[in-house]
Image (cartoon, rainbow, N blue to C red):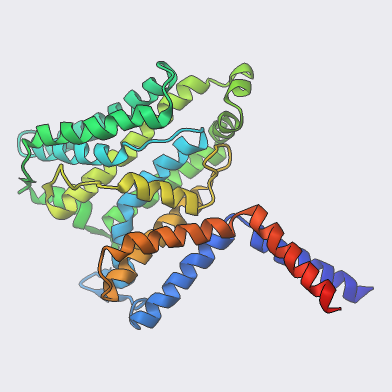
Length: 344
């Protein structure tokens, strides 16, 4: 009897572990880190040099910060059955405005102007979705196309080089030994988590994602929340644009944020957030962003041509999403059970 109870408990624990939303993303990240160590033995080695942490792992954390920010905003939009494919263009707009204003106005005013414009872009998307009744992919496609052109108009089609050293701290500085860009991304993620977990906002977001009509009937101000979340998604893209522009010390309207919207959606999907809305995981999104950046760094360090990155990324997403599929798990469990029965 006792053995049967122990076996039953172990089986239940195993099923709970595999069913946990973070199980497969964390397993994928661990496997990628293991492969990275095999390809490059010193990949996880971190050292303290000149008052800061340095190493390949720190580089991954530094480079993933913009994607983490955009993915956090994307998570909230997807959680309410939305989508924002204009975040890459908003990144370019934010960087272009910052480059245009820096030197002409105080740094704080330049940053506020860039972030304000990014937030307005998000609010515009939200208004098109809520007030005009457009499908999210169509509403944000408009800004995706026009936004890149707006950024090019701001920069006059040129790469604007920035010569203001204090601005460089955003993308290249270190705080307490860690990249300042990473600190910004973590603070934003923690802040969003606290708002969603300690206030009723998390419940509102889930209710809107599950059934927006029922949520509105229940008294949830779903329209206002939807517009606000689109605005926040634009704001996070704006912060990412500042980090990228600061890191390269210039504003490139043609390439800044290129395809970042796709990476953000992939990070959200890899993290276990339901693209149909309602169920979301900020922690999973962070892990998904780390998976994509670790994969990119591993490919570059192994000497594989960069164009292979897109193919490998697509295969990785395909495999992970299959592993997260409940239908596939049922088929595997059923197949193993039948095989075991035949063996006996």
